[in-house]
Amino acid sequence: MRMDLKLRNPYQGLIYQVDAGLDPPLLGCHHHDELELNLVIRGRITYLVDGQRWTMGRRSLVWLFPGQEHQLLHRSADARYFVAAITAGILNEAAASERYADLGDTNTPRFQNSEIGPEPFDLLRRHLESLTEDGPSAVVLNRELGFGFRSGFHYEHDDPARLNAGLRYLLLACWRYHRHGASSKPVTLHPAVQRAIAILDDQSGAVPLEHLATDGGVSMAYISRLFHRQVGMPMHQYRASRRLMRFWQVWSRTPRPRLLDAALSAGFGSYAQFHRVFRATHGCGPRQYVRTEATLKPAFNAPDPAPSGG
Image (cartoon, rainbow, N blue to C red; front, side, top):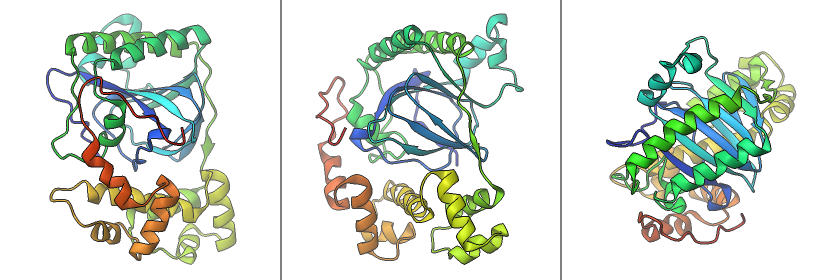
């Protein structure tokens, strides 16, 4: 799925800090035209990329190049990490330099990660923090980016020229530090697990465990155990997270559907089931959660409320 990050002129990218305590919805498998950089400040994040599960912790740099399909599978309850999206214009400009030519090399892996040293980490963290000072509230960005509760939302910054210059520096500095860092090791998913994920991602309705096992050529007990071990969560939890992701996609449409209609379209069998999954994930009922939409004000430098549970 291609995602529109809603960047408009004169912005050549965006930066915001994801805070698990602000309870941002998880996105499904997607790609975008921009390069995405993550810097993990605390906690752990887990991506699913090309049939491999990657888990990164504090001081990790994560690279997702334009067009790379990826899925944030899980983040720890204390996770905080910066996300920077950088347009192809800045990327191509950097790759024109001999020192950074490998940024534009199609043989460069489309997903990379590394753990950088404490000093580069502190420098990059301070740089990213300074660039977010003139942007929208972190509360707004954690809710809007990816789903866009407000259909007309787009990223804005009080100082676009400084933001664009900062993104250029960020790209070059991150690539230099990344070259000297050590990469984490992935878990390569069994073909039956990959097939089960593809089926669960594509179908909103109920998919019997027997069907997933038969399709993967294994027993029900084996696919259930293997899925839990390799993906890091039971299959029923993964299925629920995919349905919840589809709910947010439906809910963000204009005109806004009813909660029940959006839940049923996402594959939930009843409102009670939807409510149970939603509360287990977000810590409150869906009506209470979406009611906060009216309180979000996309003003620059708006004070962020203390995150709950973070």
